[in-house]
Image (tube, rainbow, N blue to C red; front, side):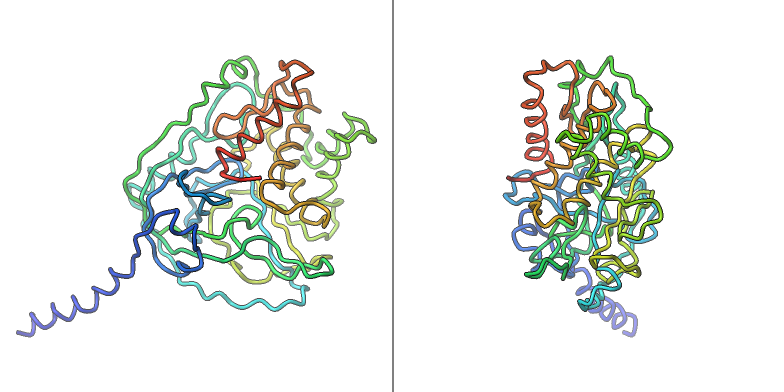
Length: 377
């Protein structure tokens, strides 16, 4: 009788725990992220880990950005994630108060499925030329984890232009939903088709013309166009965004794979900034070798400059378009033959007729942002 009572008690206690997992679709969550905030959800979708992304997607959703940001719990030490990342945080000296998030801890089940998942998403695509942050596979999977959702994403300014808030998750804090991974199952690899660019890149060998300092290399790229040319000014603006050596301008540069929830997630930073905003730039040196790091520096530097320029559009599409445009200019400055983005989008080919180059670059970036990143103008 006591044994039966104990079994019934266990069943009574454990049943609510199992019921706490909410089955949802990516589209359900993106339509109303805040309604899932704090819940443990089980979602099926396609995961990618490209140049500046670590995303769970469903191409049928009608949102922009059309994805949920993915993070591993702190201490996971996984290999998959974005090759370059810019995340924002209010600085210590910002007068705006920030409430504690008090989010529940997530423990990741590092089982066989997770190891396969992480390995596939960190397998690089190897080709001729430079494919910036490109991976070989996306992964179809069912993922479970804590969903963090917000109504708005991005930085908030008051009428005078001062930074008064930072919302959202992931790169540029542009994503209103984030899933902190607890478990993964039903792992299915999908090899990305790069064949449409292989003929253009097959004879292009990787180059390393960068100096020891990638920021100095970015300045060097600007000189290739001439200081008074529009292209030169655009490239120099990205390089100057990092500030001079030793300057405390709120830009924090680090190296590694930024795929885990930050220790200071949702809180104010522990450093001051001239405008009350900290900008954390992280680069994965294992995936950004040689000249690739210089291109990533130019890309992220453009984001930093845009976010601090009130006259620049802060719309996701515009931010990414300008950053990729500067990345292409940086490649052109060093006479790079080709530049490919994740998903197999050719953004630059020195063999293009001079009269067609501007249109080809524009089309390549536009297709990348629309089809791969799920961004709308």
